[in-house]
Image (cartoon, rainbow, N blue to C red; front, side):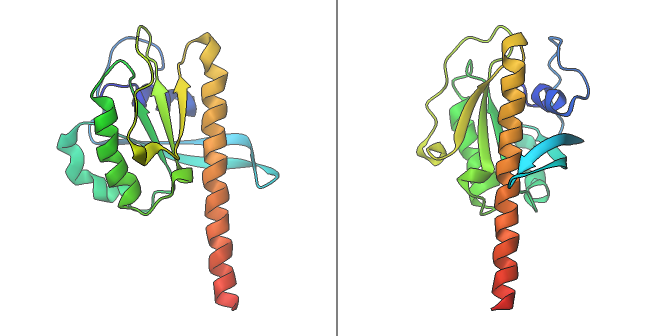
Length: 175
């Protein structure tokens, strides 16, 4: 899709190249593992391990998606506001990665990612995204701290949801 998913993944994980103008499309999927050292979840600050699957937006890899989707706890959508077709493509990803996996809107976030030199405004996304948090992101000086904060807040939200699910399951066993 050429919207900056890999660049954003590299930034969030503090690994690999973030700058540069060479766009190398991801082939299939790339798994990035990293830690968030001081994340507050349910009132407790702790170190959290994150496994971020950077999935290619190229539809020729769609046959790989079932293996990628299995066991996912959250979905971070990224689109380029300079591309008119991205809103339609996000709908397809929403169906595949959220609806088919039974994820909730709180387990999703959309980054409207402004790559250097990108012009455009946030696209009108379909009603599927009405309850999904959508944030603007850019990796230039003034946007860096906001991107990391928005991502960390998202991870904390997903972990809070996961904790609630485990608690519900434990309570159902006791009853």
